[in-house]
Image (cartoon, rainbow, N blue to C red; front, top):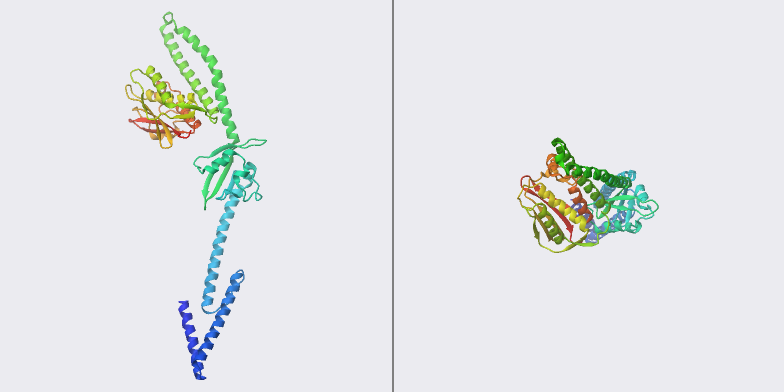
Length: 422
């Protein structure tokens, strides 16, 4: 070990000095002079080491003994640190270069919410200026209330879609990821074209559905007239007209659902100011279902009487869709239970049946428009394939979501979950 060697050398030099001093008649003086010389030598080594540490960009001095060992280790650690820093800087430069080349906006925000870096796309989309805005709070630069609230809430499981103010309105999607020591990475994408296309689709569906109602009403009217006196027509004609009337009714239901879905989508972001009594809503729904299914009344389990802020018609539509689906896809005389309860910070409206059940592989697509698990079964029940899509959008419009729990042969439970502060 270097320090043991240095101690032995020190002792050896002092002993040698004492021997020389003894030869000249004073061993103690010889030892003291030798120790002083060693002290001066070590002080010179320490001074040279200190001078190098103050400007370590220079080559290290040529020191001797333990000081040479010390400076060698320091120099090696310094080179390793520099190499590691260069590798990190190379990685950072590569990442920043990659981010800079992206068409989407990329913003790096410090833990304090201040801007650290952004690419050119982010400057164009959010109005940032780099490096002029470095160190400024991002929420102060991007003056959009939803943007600031989203970052302040710290809940980034779902992306934020918001509109920018200015001459040209942009629809942007914000995805946030945390990394490093509390820093935040913001990805901003311009989805204005997607929003416009979606709006055009909604308007097209709504307009077409509205325009089709007039000719369908005429057709239905003539069919009802013909079928009012079936005795004066040949039997094959009566059968055909009844089939036509059934399909006309089905088309009318489809158009109603399309128009209703279009209406819900167009008002999804609108403020819901009505206080809706869900328990009373279920009581009304129970009366309606009892009239339709007198042999199998709907069972209610109401454990709370709290109201939620929302739209009564939309919530009634969602609840009735769930309940009617439960009756349509369940055998006769099997219980259908609708419940309303508060669970922690959530309100839960659940509809449970003992029907045929659904394979979990279909869960992710059940709320898609016109998606059917079994086409033949849906045709028999007269379903339009839009019921769960309506339920999904109603839930989203009220800040909630739809949960699905089902097993084949054991029944299904569909639950609308709303935050308790709605």
